[in-house]
Image 1 (spheres, rainbow, N blue to C red):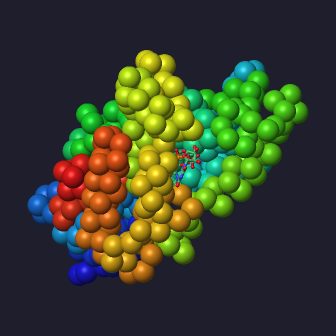
Image 2 (tube, protein in one colour; image 1 turned 45 degrees about the horizontal axis):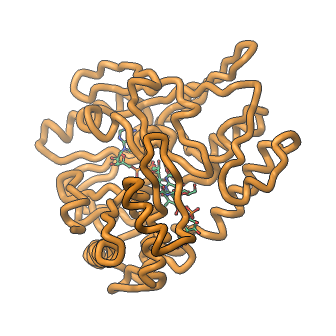
Length: 342
Ligand code: FAD
Ligand code: EPU
């Protein structure tokens, strides 16, 4: 049986899998995963497919995370949420605000499932998932054993966590625990959020502003398929940054705690005059150069070729290597995005 995967990933490329099966409980997840495994069929668990690129047809079973449920408890100082992995992230953010629970508003409108949020430690507008995370619960897909990893054990970093490494294969995230302080402090460090007065701003105002900026800059995947930022922002040494600053005095930059400096890849790509640049049906988005879009029935080959060209131009002009953020999926599982776009 061939099933079109176009609706199950936000790049909306026309690729197929042998089967697509929604899973509603951890035991359904284990059963389906083990069935595929025993039949020597590749198997892939997806949330909403908003951070992946299928580079070819998937020769196995795709499981869709539909684990649902939110439990809320509180004490004098904190709200505690235990959220099933298949809940929608943005719906969760909206729901918290209706319950007067603050702290997730900067992360509004990020597509995807709650259970996918820890994997790349989703971040936007000055806040990362790790700030709210108390624990992440995973299940061992071979044994069915569950375990809870504390915030520290998750080894969160910029678009990084242990779920891209030791817990990548053979485990699935089934729920996350969030801990949100009742004494709310707004985060107003990023862009137009700095205009707000920290003593009077509400979480709803931040939510509305973040939704407005995101809607203006980022393409709606239902209009032009995409997976958000295609590349990570590179982190370079201070010495390299000093050289760049001489040549480009207005370069946007974010100093890091270790002395290195993060540079927006979107700016680097934009400086290479690549906005709107197109290969086949794939193009660099005109509002935000960090986003590659499926402009007109793109194939995976078009997207890969475009990503290669973008990396090459940035390397030639700035001597900086940019690395894909999007995860690449081949016929039997994840492949090395770095090598295929070099
Ligand atoms: P998927 O794409 O379905 O899965 C991603 C990977 O994780 C796959 O390899 C999958 O196999 C694996 N996986 C999925 N679920 C599980 C699980 N339960 N257990 C174990 N492995 C699993 N990201 C940001 O950080 N900040 C942003 O501002 C942002 N903006 C975006 C804007 C747009 C328009 C788009 C399309 C994407 C954006 N992203 C952003 C990227 C994306 O939203 C996040 O990476 C999100 O967390 C992906 O969730 P998902 O459910 O779609 O994951
Ligand atoms: N810029 C340009 N030209 C462009 C794009 C950006 O000059 O085409 C400049 C902007 O003017 C700004 C700077 O680059 O000075 C940063 O741009 P922006 O605020 O749009 O954010 P970003 O660094 O491109 C990152 C995340 C986004 C996140 C936003 C907001 C990464 C890889 N991307 O983008 O996350 O939403 O900040 O915090 O870190 C994602 O991961 O998929 C994603 C969308």
